[in-house]
Image (cartoon, rainbow, N blue to C red; front, side, top):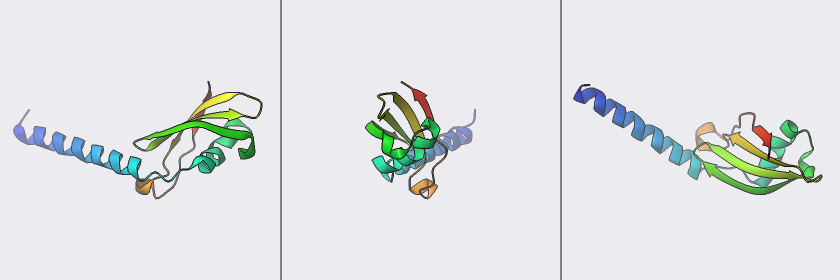
Length: 96
């Protein structure tokens, strides 16, 4: 591998890491947004959900939600940051 290739790969990795940091720092999703985005996937209304815990890594927001019936779900919401202009992809949710 040439020095040029190594430098190009290093620059690309640094750029991607920078984008991830920007996305994480500019996340705009609050608990109400998380409930609104995940409710349809779980099959309940947003008013039936409580956000137990949430955190953001890169462009993903990870949340644990509890329904009024006591079931818990782990969901991942992608987007909702400056890099995605606030748009959100369909979330994925799985029973806990």
